[in-house]
Image (cartoon, rainbow, N blue to C red; front, side, top):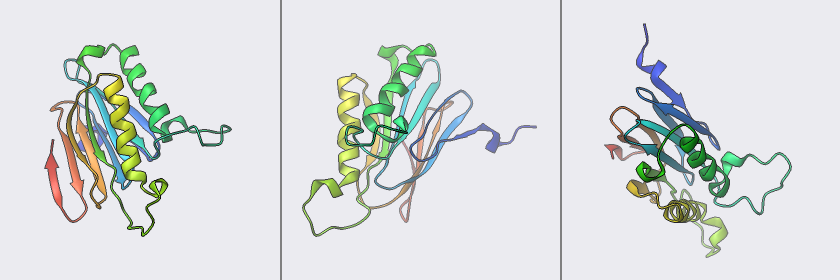
Length: 166
């Protein structure tokens, strides 16, 4: 007999996974990271990326984890969904995370990883013409998110702020 836990695909930090109905995609540890769900509502198929950093161009190229960066993980996410039969014009996105977990006295934007992640994700989705239909970004609290391929709802548990469905 299957339990609810059997229906959860866990997405790690700097990871990318896919699921279709009746599976759920879940990731935790979203502080400055951004959880990006792109899905085809007609096929009830989705992928989730746990984006740690906005840009891979300054990373060392040997042993590069392409799932760690917005500019490398999100194209893989979209192309894999299309390869699995999703239609580009049906794709929609829901995003969460990008918090500023620590306060800095410096105005150095390099320290504002959450904000840079949110900007990179939104720019990619806009360029790809994938509408963001729901979002819970920025702030100063960590999040755990779970996307249901059955209901197409994104459940967001925010530290000290409760739960919401988008």
